[in-house]
Length: 191
Image (cartoon, rainbow, N blue to C red; front, side, top):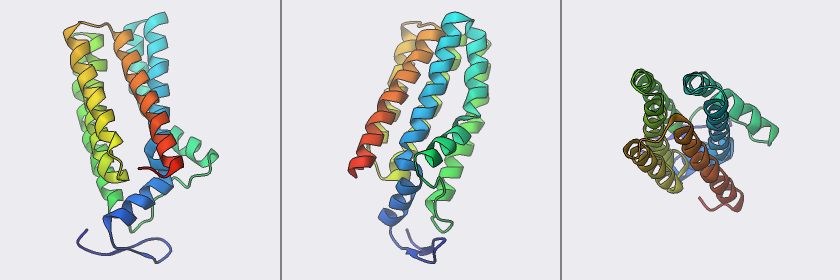
């Protein structure tokens, strides 16, 4: 961090570690968002198994729009502010990463015209890449593992020609597993 920033309380955020700590404190280290996202993937999985893979694509697409608001509600219910300090320069980085992810989602939708499974595999790659940036936002290298697992899963699922339901289940399982790990790390203060 080359310049000092001031948070909402007037306290200077002078180091990367201070900025990351502020992000961790506001968002439970990102764990609750991962758990909510994994839950949305789980709903899409259920839809894929019981309704249709096309309906599952739209479930994840529209359900994905609810991940951030639902994560904020869950965070507030769990006692987290869900608001990083205005002077935290990592807030801008978080927004830039989110916008990049949103710009990539139409690619996954286009893949769904060829194969519904490809939509889920494409989304695994997109969110895997997004989670890689969380290692910097939260100062937790576990996000590199999470992003790596999501990316590798996407390729493996593609090469074994997994269907949409199995692909969605894979995303759900990975996100929920890592969400639990991340929350445990946050609670112990080991990020």
